[in-house]
Image (cartoon, rainbow, N blue to C red; front, side):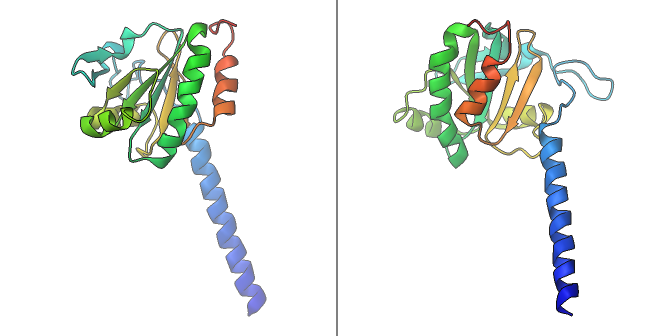
Length: 185
């Protein structure tokens, strides 16, 4: 009986690992660009992707003209997000003169973000996303709505990278510097 039980546990563990691997691949595999028209769903016009600043102004994604826009969806209540923010602060400092602009879209309320910003000096724009940002997350390929979630947009504002979960500094920098001619060295 013991060998059969061990075999069943092994099969169950193997199936669980296979499912986890499939889901991980599915999360990072290329998805259709939501900013481009697709017959199955309406296109998202980049000019309509507008969020409030902490000052209450509306800003569109197209307001930033850097070669590459790194859009990070985060929340003050999200521990991995809080580990990632200092990484993006350092990367913004190192890469801002190379055509890379980070942009934080907080899926949070204004008061929580303002309080957080009294303790951390973020050197890139922070916008308030709320419900609209959750919908955009799904359109950009984050089917689970998990945070942090980061997308990299090229100069045409096409999605060229999706990162679900914490993006570690070395990996992010390697990816961004590897983009080629759009990054000024």
